[in-house]
Image 1 (cartoon, one colour):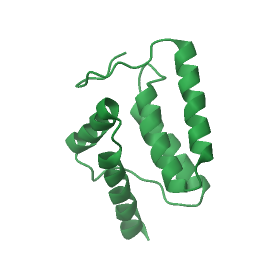
Image 2 (cartoon, helix red, strand yellow; image 1 turned 60 degrees about the vertical axis):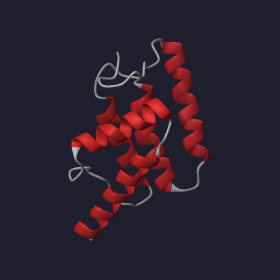
Image 3 (cartoon, one colour; image 1 turned 45 degrees about the vertical axis):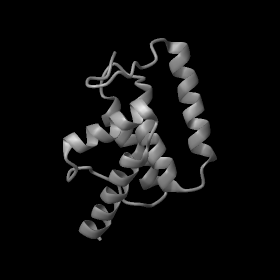
Image 4 (tube, helix red, strand yellow; image 1 turned 120 degrees about the vertical axis):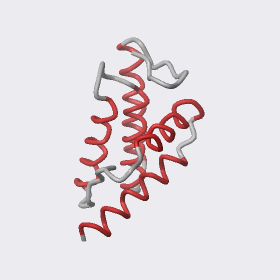
Length: 117
């Protein structure tokens, strides 16, 4: 299944997807920072496109599960402009540039902390 609005073509067979998921798990487990772990889960699960549908939703849930596990508040992304979210994802998909998504992630964490605590 392709990703609308991008030239990115996700992996298309179970063997490749399984390998990419294992690499993602190894990378995430190698990181010390919970925020780095959560951010990587968020972008890489979406990028790998392991499911027919719901990849971004699943990635947000798993990322939040990581944050909650380490006793941090979850992120809702409810104040993010959907177009900005998509632009950040496309920048990562097409150029492997995580900076825009990192800024969204940081902004949402700050919003959550300032709003709920």
